[in-house]
Amino acid sequence: MNDGTRELLDAAAVGEQLDAHGRVLPPWRAYPEIERYSIGWRVGNGEWYLMVWWHWWESARMDEAERIVYYQADEPPHEWLDWAAQQIWPGEAGVRRLAGHGRHHAAAIFPPKVP
Image (tube, rainbow, N blue to C red; front, side, top):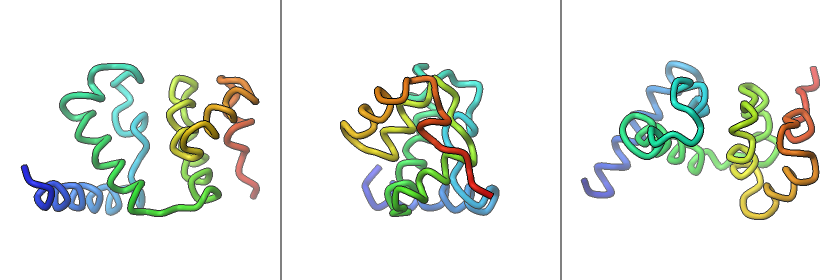
C-alpha cells in the first residue's frame, strides 16, 4: 500500500469515527476487549485503529487544554495513564507529570472538568 492510499483510508476511517461519535474515540473505548499491552494493538483491528487514531490526533493540532478535555471525556483507565500522558505531554514531560502525581492518580493528571 502506498502512502497516498494509506492517507485516503485513514481519512475515511477518521470520517466514520467523527460521524458516529463527533471525535475519534480513545483506544480503550473503541476496543475495550483488547488489554493495554496486548499484541492486539500491534496486529489486526487494534493496530489499524491506532493508526487511524494517530492520523486524527496529529492532524487535529489540539493545544494542551484541548488534549486534556479530550481525555476528560473518556478518562483513561489506570493501565492507559502513561500512554495518555505521553499524548498530551510528549517526551519527558509526560513521564515527569506521572512521576510527580503517582501513576494511578488520574484526577491529578487530568483534572476534573469545571462546569
